Image 1 (cartoon, rainbow, N blue to C red):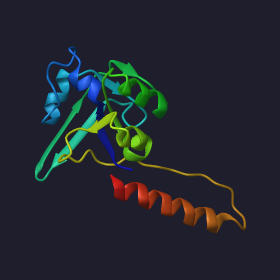
Image 2: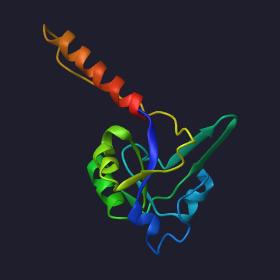
Image 3: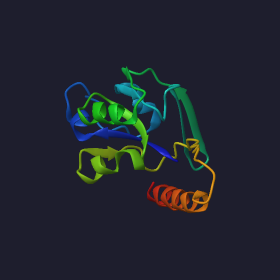
Length: 138
């Protein structure tokens, strides 16, 4: 899964974020950061062509559940790093915007555990289709 930096339009317009939308990864230092499941370590890396940058961010909030981190970001409390699958609804409603779209933020490892048996192949095929759709949408 590929996480991306996302923020609510509310955060970008709010007086506490006079910096506006970040144009480069280093601009994120001027914003409140929400550390969610895709970024609990606070270590963020970005790549654009031959340029790469990696740095430690300090979270204003640390929330271990995706829904909680996304809800905090929607309320304008800061920028969150999250994959599309976790915030598709907020993007479709226009509550969220993707930040730094030309920068790649890498991938997050995803593991699944499910029971073996006759239904294993069907579950495996369904999971692979779901992950393929999610990955192709960014």
